[in-house]
Image (cartoon, rainbow over all chains, first blue to last red; front, side):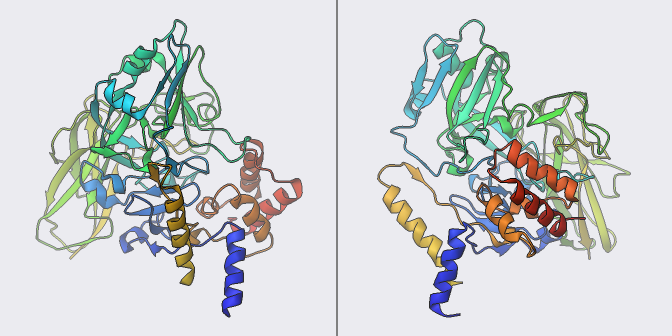
Length: 401
Length: 103
């Protein structure tokens, strides 16, 4: 191809907005996973190599190897947006957090105000996409086909939301607060991403934060710089990024991203018979119990007759993990894993388990966790049409010998 | 491989021009080639209409489905998300998706 025609082709491609970037295939191990097969590893600003879900808006998932440790590094933390364009720059001279609506004193806070006018509070908490592991649903459901990497755990620090609302003075009759960020859709017809929480939910919970630090550093842009909502125990859909506007309202907010989006069946399991629709729904809320094996990764080879240390994490919606059990015979017999440091009831709990494979061949190692109120994971996955609340017993398949 | 340099230059230019005003600026990579749509009748209309709002990996990652599934998806994009797609193009897109991403 001549230079002229190549330039012309590049121009045409650029005109369609479909520039093709260079990327590397995901690791051989990831390729053995049907959900991740074909998806490349990509490197985005302030991020290390993550598994691409979508380019516009950017959605990136964390490789499983990071879930051998309790804290997920900022650069490896997953990315999820709803609409495009997304904020690509923030000027702190003009950025404000506005608190309006049914309050005595509307506020416009700078980042410096957040840092200096309110006590700095830190909480270690899991941030997990509602649809994490949606790609594993059977029958399959439409939506982002995540593997298991749309989750992460960090120490979040910032101002208590209830301290901010108290400073603004919540007026009688305020029922909910709505949360809006800097991300705005390109067409006015596309619903802006706005979420809501009950005022009682906020005022009763000292761990709901407006966080400006993640693992001791400013938030990466793709995780919500300069500040995001942190709602420990609840799915990430509430953790509004690039937070800019909080409005106190006198009713239950039911715009698109609260209804019909992000709803679960209104019953104890949040589930329905596969392939059916729920009669009634409620907004998704607290996370279910999950546990994962981060190392060795699925598809790895381990030696016969020598101990291998299995490592992973477990978490739930805020009761705290009490026990993690591992089975090396496909779930017939279970043994307790060793739990790592307790970083709080909202955090990943690290665990380790030493196993000496006796015979060469394929081996399935299975993990389940129990929280402080006895909730666990099921042998069979539950199903709902949006692909939320995944909490089945997890496993890796290894090759011994 | 030469194409890869251009986004880098654009990134550099944007970072320099925006550096004075913003405390934090990032530049996103271009759409990845894993999103490339299968060739077939209607692919151009599908690519143009769908990628004006989102990258086409949103399409290629979905479970395969018949015309009913894809008609539901395209209708949702128009009715719920307000995608400005006319009836003729919507029909073309559904036919394309059902053929290339059908079951």
